[in-house]
Length: 204
Image 1 (cartoon, helix red, strand yellow):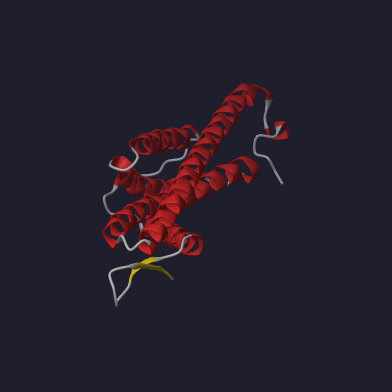
Image 2 (cartoon, rainbow, N blue to C red):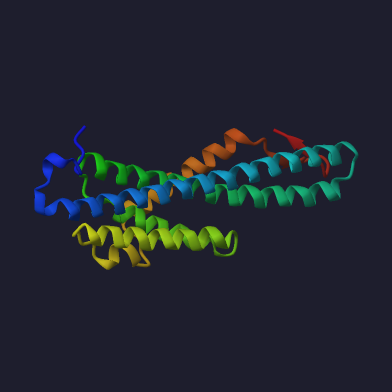
């Protein structure tokens, strides 16, 4: 695989310039991977909490305390909603990491990140009232990626990043991200459902 930063591609005069570019791109990649790990930690903690609460719903239902079971079930639904957004965000971040790696390895145009940046901005607002630290870090990453693309000499019109109406490709990325998130939730967690015959909870 060809590395665009390979020394055989550089003239002596451009060596320092490309070294700085390489360092900047690689530092950005480290930052992105660190953020993905942070998302994974949030997902793990929420999944563990969801399992604990689900067991509590089962226990309360067994004891006939349907009122409390419904309250706990409501908490479970909130956790699953956050998990859905986090899993979608992780999917988007993985795509951006892959594009950065492709840029390093084969020189794929950095501008190809544009639609993913638009999708990132769309999903960022979701976390403002859920996990503010995720929202703030997502914004920092968005800004860093914008600066990185500019530093490569590529131009992406501002509308690609900031238009209220995402591009079709960005919308497709968002749809795929949430489809992955919903599939994972279905596969990971049992469903909490109100019985049609009595006010109780059952596992489907």
